[in-house]
Image (tube, rainbow over all chains, first blue to last red; front, side, top):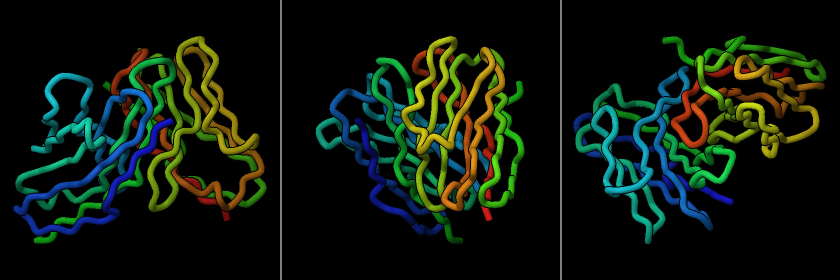
Length: 115
Length: 113
């Protein structure tokens, strides 16, 4: 089984400041990792994903994340945030394909950007 | 092209009533998933359909919950004898076969009074 822990439930930052949203996971098998964003009153949108290869992955809207296998982490970063980045961010994993591909999500981190 | 659509967008019901939630996946997507998002929490997997294979129902919280899918098209999630703890946003997602990015619908917000 897999589990995902997002270490911060809320992160307030000022506009143009850098931000890091932390994600740790637990799994007995290898996994794929994802970050999704949920803007107010909308569905989830994929920000980025790690499947294999380079551990630094770049996504949409200037976000990037680094997979660290030894620390079982997949932290999300952005060097300079904008008001429009205000949203809820979810880290998720799925076991490398063995059958059903359900996603296991963390509890979410609410990112609030202040002017 | 059209994304995943869900209906209704909002549903208010009384405790003990049955409800049906509908999901229209992206055309050509063979996999369809239902998740539940309770207030302030992450998403919980409910059920997964893949082509003609038996669905993975391992996430359904009780026998009051059931889901059907006709071929590779529409799916309905049915909750019988609703309880207040069923109040949540129910999200549907679809994808191509095997691992692939899941595309999410806007969700149905269910409120049980």
